[in-house]
Length: 191
Image (cartoon, rainbow, N blue to C red; front, side, top):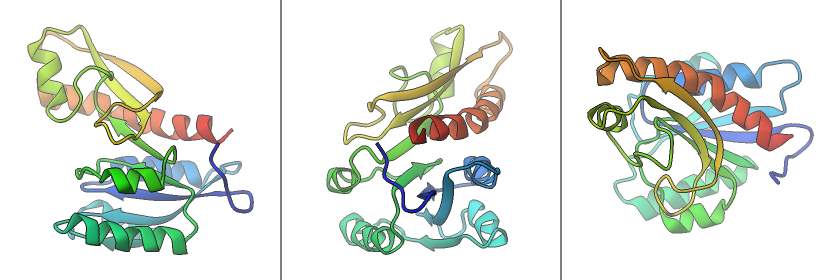
C-alpha cells in the first residue's frame, strides 16, 4: 500500500518528451476528490516540451542528463526524500533506472507502456505489433521492477489494429487510451 502524508499522495512524474501523460495525471490531480498531488517533474532532457507545461502549472521541475547514472540518481533520490515523495509515475521517461534506485522505491514506481504487456517490452512496440499481424495492441500501466517492463500489471486497454494502420496512426490512438487509463490506474492503487 502506498503511504501518503496528510490526505494527498505526493507524486513525482518522470518525463523525457512532450509530457502528454503528465498533463492527464496533472488534470486528474486537480479533480475535487483526487488523492494526488504532483510535487515535482524530473526529466532527463533539458528541453523536453513537458517542462513548459510544468512551468505553466507552477510545478517544480529538475533536469538531469543521467549520463553519470549513479551520481544523478543520488541527486534525484535526495530531492524525492526532501519532498516526501510517496510514488513515482514514469510517463514517457526514456531512461532505465538502476536496480538500486528501483529497490529504494520498491512497489512505489509505476509506468505506462505502449503495448499489451507482456508482449513487446522495450521500444518500437507499434511497428512490432503491426509487423506480427496482431489484431490488437494497446497500453499497460504496471509496477516497475529491475526487469524491464516486467512488473505486475495494474491496468490495460486494448486498441484494435486496422489494416491501413502504420506506427504513427496506431501510436496516436493508443496515446489517447494512455491518457484515460493512467489516472484510472493511479486511482485504483490509491484506494
